[in-house]
Image (cartoon, rainbow, N blue to C red; front, side, top):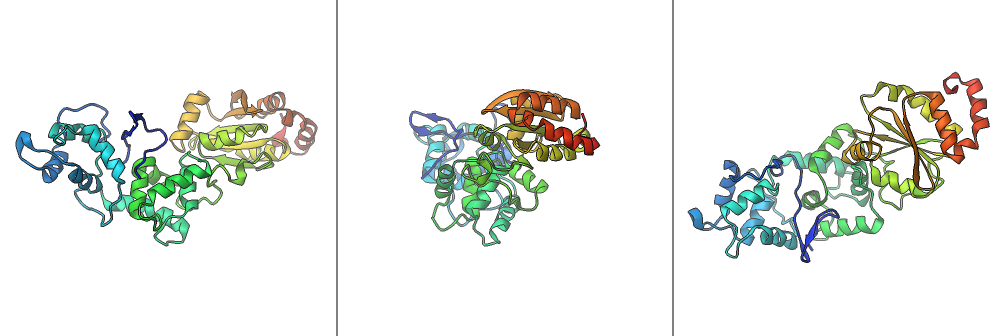
Length: 348
């Protein structure tokens, strides 16, 4: 029942553990340190059989070590057997895991550490979206993925939930830890709920959500939370414009009411907004896709393809590039001129 995330590598038909970037969940030092941290090594000696150079960590002891911290263990097993087996194969010798093997394992970020309340905080925030039942709903987990920039096909989300629910009794706290270890960055989850303390009901659950139909969201601005969500909208072929903003950008905020009004004027064009520092997916879109240096920045898509980009909170430039690049905007030039005659903020 073990599994790894979609981006995890495979080797010779076996699962290969990937590195996790979780707060207090392993070591984020990219250097291949030859000596493990003293506190981490003390955990090896607590679970290993034998002494000195002959000490070895066996498979069952490895599972105990991976599922516990120095401060707590859960009463329920939460790592799938195949997942533990994959790590054991990766790091062990024929007679077990040596202390130097353990140093590599620790350096690769595979140890669970930190305080219980760090993990409970993230779970409680998700559980609130399911009325505090102690079990996470499909909608809550799907919207969490969307908020972190990952929107999946319905069958992919169902597969992840099914495999995470080890005992098939609902996705509880232990199952959430297993899901987080395999698919999520817990540090990013915690940061997400610091800035989004209330559930975002408008987030899509999966790629079958109504948001991704061609006629959805016309006349208003849709905020997207990552490339997967944005790409799913763009690929439906409808004309779309994306406003890239950052939380510290004052011109972005100044242009916002104008952008909202233009969404009503150019009512045949899908208007999108993405915050470039919202999460890692948004950062990647800003940095690697748009190569953004100045904000606000705009990108227009037609027929599923990126056709133009520009930057700056300039109404004249916005109007000219919109009507030149998007047939749906050009077709409403007369409506835009009529609106601008009554509303100075829309005047080029």
